[in-house]
Image (cartoon, rainbow, N blue to C red; front, side, top):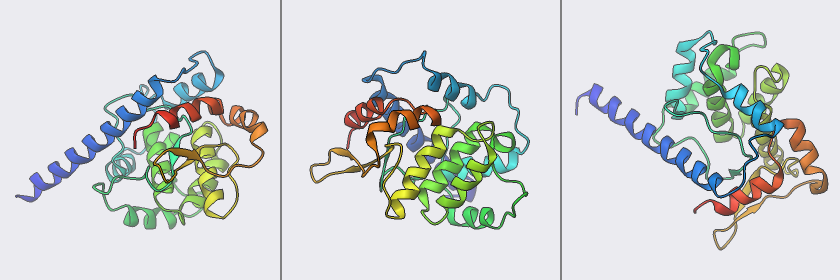
Length: 222
């Protein structure tokens, strides 16, 4: 197979895998009630809107999207706070993530980092995917997003990554976004700190109530 055809075939495979995962998430979410009048919903939809094309670095954005298999053919999915440890990662058929991560690691503070104004909402979602793929890179992604503020990174994505970073460090999660499959394949919430006040923390991060995440997790197919 000629090189160009191989490249196109890989790109098509990545697109199909990503679209299938997005469809699975939307199908699971459709069985659970999403309050479209909630502040978290409005905040996420506003951040994820790509209609203005107001970012500055298309080449970096393209690299991020192609490497992680992030699709922009449909509206970017809401962050519902349901990440399955060891399963929800960048597709194996995507590009060379380690080379891209190495390049991003070398970016000095004050340098061009892939935030919303630079690579758009889809680009920041691709950065989340990279952090979720590599546990040693995740803290750097998390801190850069935190430092940038809400106009440059989606708080719900940051909270989701923070939970993953905490668990990787042997600590309990704060927002209840990380799930594991038990021996039967059922998704269960990973260890969580102060679950009684989870919804208060989630509201501040722009996440939906914990009950919705639990519902979506129960609806996911193994």
